[in-house]
Amino acid sequence: MNNYELQEKINQLKLERDAVIVAHNYQIDDVQKVADVIGDSLALSRYCAQNNKKVIVFCGVHFMAESAKILSPEKTVLLPEITAGCPMADMITAEDLKKKKKEYPQAKVVCYINTSASVKAECDVCCTSSNLIKIVKSIKEEDILFVPDQNLGSYAAAEVPEKNIISWPGYCITHHNCGESDVKRARELYPDALMLAHPECREQIIRAADFVGSTKQIIEFAGRSDAKEFIIGTEMGILYKLKKDNPDKRFHLLSDKFICPDMKKTTLQSVYEALRGMKYEINIDEGIRLKAKTALDRMLEIG
Image 1 (cartoon, helix red, strand yellow):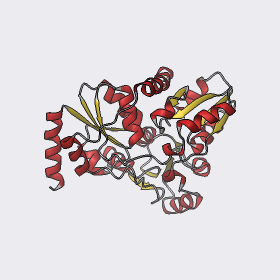
Image 2 (cartoon, rainbow, N blue to C red):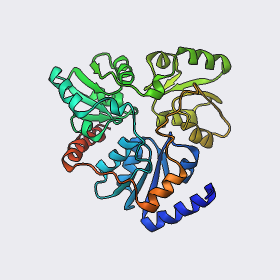
Image 3 (spheres, one colour):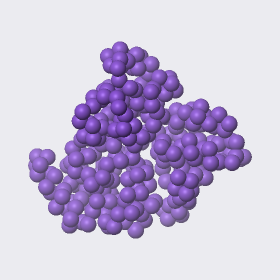
Image 4 (cartoon, rainbow, N blue to C red):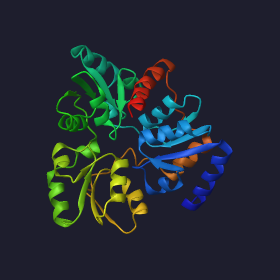
């Protein structure tokens, strides 16, 4: 089937299955086009929890589908590409974290949403790149064990110097690949453009940026800015919404390295197969789910 035929079949199956399709900002354009809503991982999970559809087709990676299941245990959550994972999330396990917590018994544990359910279950509070600073500032304790992104931890340490951030040495393989040479090249090519970067980037990228924020914050900043040209320092999938929302503005990717192979696994065909065969269903041990939900709920309470 061609893309048009696949879209028709997907829309038909959505009605039959009482399903909603959600897609992360980093998904390929064709998948974003067929989605009911596009956003970051937490916004999508919250949307799923508030939506009354029985089936959720989560076009993203494994930890995202898990987050949706944590918040919506009564719903069927499908991940179209079961091998779509997150290398950064895989850089820490629940056992790893348990050992690290023994080294810093006085520290509060904050986990990035880019972690497995079992790791979230070992944490005090979860965070996203949007609310990280607010979460860190809300913690009374001085010592904070932050997992798993060292770049995000470094960003938090710079923004909240009164806290002692102990970072796990993990990183996003996509954002971590970009360096100062990429910034120099982009600045030379587009001297009038504002540079917007995700805090998962290395420290030197953060220092060079005109604005630092999550995918949601980057999209919002570009939309309200008077500037007409931007250098985008995050995964290329975000360009779809940026260009769609701002047809009068120009967007350039900071580096051609900003491609997440796992995010690009999901296709229209796999979305169709997921709905047709009800695969691949995400399930979580109830004990782990409840503990992980506590960390998510604490984050939502803080904001």
